[in-house]
Image 1 (cartoon, rainbow, N blue to C red):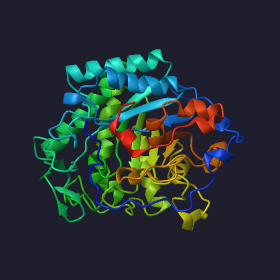
Image 2 (cartoon, rainbow, N blue to C red):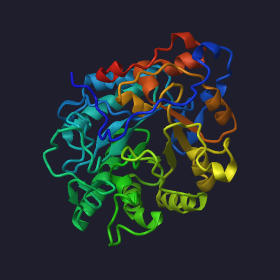
Image 3 (cartoon, rainbow, N blue to C red):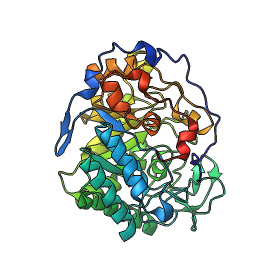
Image 4 (cartoon, one colour):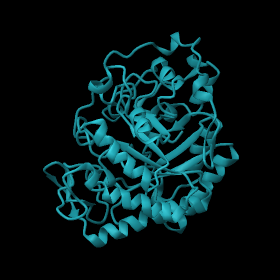
Length: 396
């Protein structure tokens, strides 16, 4: 069985500094803030725990099968409030960067996703697909069968790869995003998420290091470079109507550069995210490598708001935070060969209690233990399975 590889491993993984408080000391912690219901429009969740999208690469020919459906069913049975699928790609040549990433287009793939959402609903869960185009990234020597595409034919600053997208390519891609979003609604999913983070296509338009265009799709400011994302969001909103919840995943950092920062100040972040909210984003899914780190420490101190906290403050929209929840290493380290032990949730509980953000996404911990949420709720902390890199090679 093929092992999952992170698409662009350009930097050495780093162990988190000063991991604190093992799970052995957590049996008396009040985790009730994680298990409050959450409602927004048509979305009603039983708790605040989200399964973060994690590439699994187990859909032969791009079609989800019974194993995929049972994988997600188990997380719903394990009391996850909202499941976000692994990245699933739109109808564009070379939209995926690994050979068994699922499609979210075409009769066979959509029939497979129908079985997935039916299984999740039968188990009492809620779910949305993460709709994706991987841009000019690809894994190792795998050939996607067509030239990869990006805003300026770059995978990173000064690093050429693939084709620069034409106006026609851009128009077709926007339409493909909208078609996949509509399919999510038609199949009965509860939400849809657009992947606009981590150095993939939408993010390559955001990032000045990969968007060097001099036409209307580029620009000197982050807001100028957001035009592609804005048009994607508007097209999706038109396709799904006003009531179906739309999530946008965003990040400052890139897999190509951990230190990259799109919005360098609260004011720049406000203009960027407010425009996206006005275009139709309902929830911002804000990815950090370490969720507890302040986004702008110079603005509000070392204990200040994280990325999701700032996004909520600036837009008034609900936010999802994510980044190494409950684990002793960040997730990029896992793809470099490191396992992760469980660590305390005190930092998370405090932020949830003061409503800094609304939902918290958990990734690797839920790959290793489908019942993670249920075990946290019932304080069966010592029964939680530790994450091991070998778990990425199975669909358990």
